[in-house]
Amino acid sequence: QVQLVESGGGLVQFGGSLRLSCAASGRTFSSYAMGWFRQAPGLEREFVAACIWRSDSTYYTDSVKGRFTISRDNAKNTVYLQMNSLKPEDTAVYFCASRPNSYSDYRRPQNYNYWGQGTQVTVSS
Image (cartoon, rainbow, N blue to C red; front, side):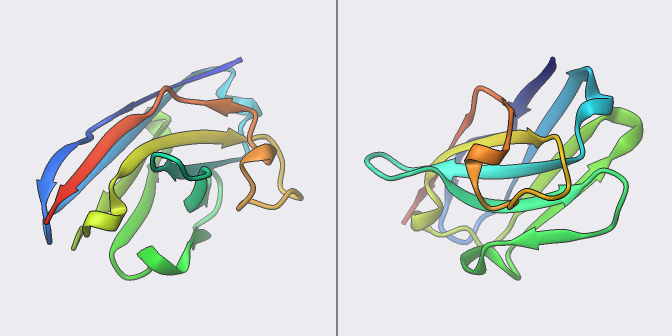
């Protein structure tokens, strides 16, 4: 199994920044890629960003392009999500997740097999 622990959430004002971290442990060699998702109350979990452990490829949903940056530190088995120019609509619980293969759609949460517990991000207007 792969254990994922997120940290770094909190309350921030409109236009502010936060950096989320996701530390992976356990059978990390079984993880091909990592993703960040978010879920606001009453809404479905949505894709935010993804990266691949052994590649420089990154992927973003349109609403965060130019504001969020996903990065990884392979030596620390940690993935980060730098969030700048935050907006109230970014308010959600943010989850990191591990995807085991390269062929599945990185945007679909169903294709990730391990999840962290989530961290709350609240952006005030």
